[in-house]
Image (cartoon, rainbow, N blue to C red; front, side, top):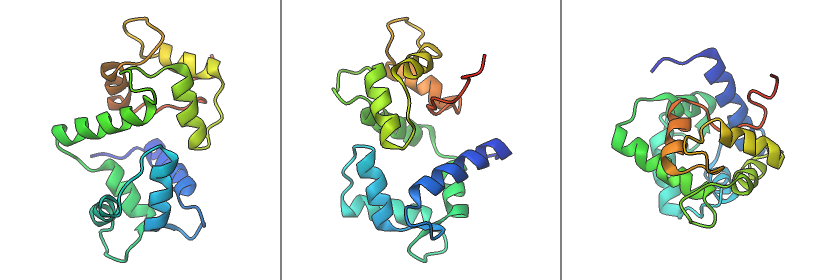
Amino acid sequence: MMRSSTQVKELEAVFEKFDVNGDGKISMSELGSIMMSLGYNASEEELCKMMREADSDGDGFIDLNEFIDMNTKEVDLKEEIEDLRNAFKVFDADKNGLISPEELRNVMRSVGDSCSIEDCKRMIRGVDSDGDGQINFEEFQVMMMRGRSPSCHAGSSS
């Protein structure tokens, strides 16, 4: 998969947020903290599996290059859809099958992005094909497949 310089810069910024102690690598405990902040309580077994998949040099950590590789490699469609469903569940706190502006804001805040409700409503309008003011799984899938992960700073200048 081709990597654009914009994509690499975005991944570097995400990596820096995840690298809590700033040592240039993500440990298993940092990975666990990340998952918790996203509302997912990963078991030790799940964390080990994630580390094994990403840690190509086997040093027990995920460095920036491994992180970029992990986030840009080709994956089969079935696995990608399952990953999107799991991500959707993180956003859909009340489990009603829809992501509201409030749910979107809560997740954005948990990853250090301070969005207003208006920012979240604007993001939702960008993909809300049925006009209900919320994101269903199909709309979420379209947004993520386009490579538009939620950001309250995207497109804020008109």
